[in-house]
Length: 358
Image (tube, rainbow, N blue to C red; front, side):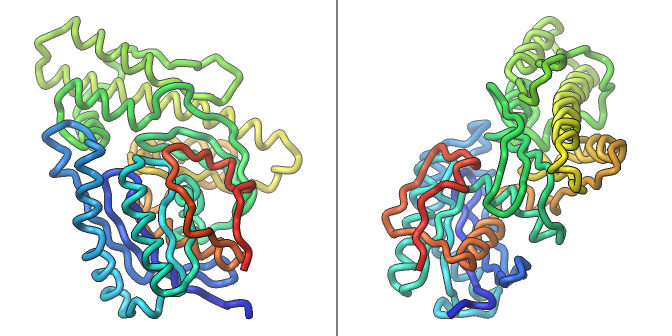
């Protein structure tokens, strides 16, 4: 008998946030977030200036069970009310993924309920449908610490990659620059805040692949350029530090804007995409307000609406995992208990991955 709605417990442990959420998903592809708990490991990784995989995995082990109890309590549910369990299965840090996925397998086995292994990128890709009440098709900029991609979201489970980074992700460019400049952790927000105090025209950093007709990104050369420029002017005073941050952020924003515009033109020129109304940004770096403002101006130029989820749903969270799990379960899709965790898992594989129909 087909279910009209399902309550899904979602687990996210792909990097340095341990998150648990319960989302009720109905057959009209609408969702209601019943609880959403995130435990950040910032304090544990801050002394190292970046994520330490072993520390992340240990923290997931310690915090996951209490977070599940907290999520159930916030949703006013018992574990027996859960009709499916979803866990991020990749891509991400393999140790953390194994912790979350193994926990989900235990719950699925113990309660005899379906297990859904969710692609972390698909979670980000479909979040705007949950939080902003939009429908595909739309162009997606998925921009985070580990990924920078332009994707045509044709429908749920149907994705076309338009462009991707050929080296570093935008979030990685932010984080490594912040670590080099020693301005704090997490690096992205620290650099964004410092950039507000600086002159974004002071330093002329390159815009890699600016003249390429492709929609691919490159950020490693930009990061190297910052390091070389900073070494020329050591020691750096506070004003110059802010100018470096502002100019560097502006270069990243320009790279994103240039390639996003190429993707918009490419997709709108194809007749089958003539009904595209939205350009969506999702992922942790989509929290950056300067990037949001730049993309709003760009999309207005093409009479498209710029959409970005609330900031708490741009960064890693389990609501997006539960949401995708529910969407797939209502389509008759779930996984075997031997589904592996995957450090790499391109979103384009989602329409062809092997599933179990029950």
